[in-house]
Length: 260
Image (cartoon, rainbow, N blue to C red):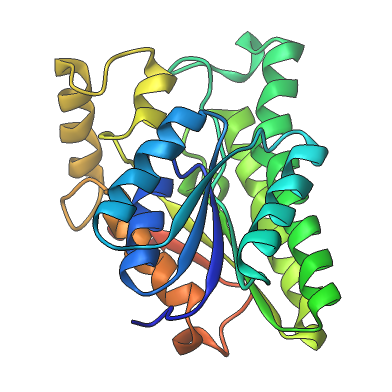
């Protein structure tokens, strides 16, 4: 029970990595606000957690809208009395797989940056404000990407994740005097998620996704695709007191890809 008694917000908890994180946080003793732009999906996560005897509440949140992010922080505090952990697991993919920079419209660019970068900025900002109001230490975990560490394809998407990485490191330094730790996980290819399927405009169970899984497994030195559960395990560690002297870290969850 490494998160026993902790109060956490997990953005994007309705599916994929966010849902896996919320479930694992609950297993480790945290009470979780499951935030998602799709409230029905968030409620599904909460139902699964409650069926297992966990404590969770669903909250609709469009992370690109500051008032909604602030309201989600307020919900956690009103419901549980304080806040310990904020996971900014937010992001949307490039409109289609293989899309190169010059094919992006300004609208594509603005939507990617609004969700992938502004959403993390807002989550970080309001988490820090709440931790300082409480006068307590706190933990922020952002979801970056291998695409922000190396040239992975998807130049605009990768640039938004690179921005998340730099925000993570800079805020880790700013937050350190207040006991606020800030880290990021950087997953590589995760074919069996709604996120990757959305980027390709295909169903997660389609043969095309299976072929994508074979491809990403082949380029990861460990030979396996990355799963949402892989990310959730890393999140539990980084958000726990076991990582009390770890901050400013960009942790690749990539089967060794960036070590090549």
